[in-house]
Image (cartoon, rainbow, N blue to C red; front, top):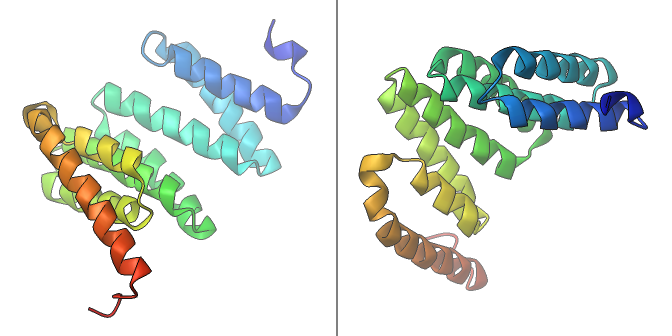
Length: 171
């Protein structure tokens, strides 16, 4: 078996998470078997990347299954770790996923707030791809506006860069 040939515990965790991700839309039982093993081992050895990956896959699985409350639990745990580590870009991804999870359980106002948090972080870091993914996550009905939003987003990034360069932070 592939897992028994892993050279280290960390490689085994990463491989378990990868297998879980590949299976998450087809085989729920196997997905959770690999996820739980990767998560438990990651927690035991304090491997944060493994913990975060397991939680992200678990949240994605629950969002796919329209189980927003369960996704929120995993995402809130991720958010706590990322806030502690001050990893804002990954935190922005978590906010975007929280928006999706909250939307599935009709917490639309909270979902929009999470989307705004993600957008604010991506704008601050001038992260075009993150912004595009954030705007794409808004929903099927609004995707036709994404081209306009992406153009607007590019202008916002240029404006942020300009203000940083010219020290207009106190406006």
